[in-house]
Image (cartoon, rainbow, N blue to C red; front, side, top):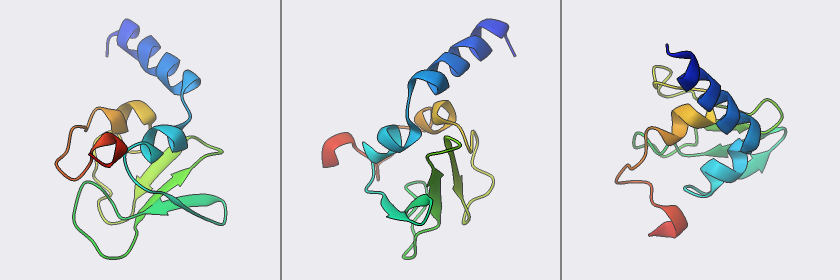
Length: 89
């Protein structure tokens, strides 16, 4: 990929807290060292979407093939999604 794009992604990651970013779209519940929610990218009844604040990483155990899994830039690139709206809107 283009180095300028990679530099931009690193800048976004370094200046953002993934829990704050994702928590602006969905309600996260802290359980142990991770934050959990039902995945916003597919329907489910049991939370499988985890966010690791310490490593600034997210992962969905129900959809391991999500493009951009793990990075705040990858997650934000998947918005807008009908199930996700900032401020509950």
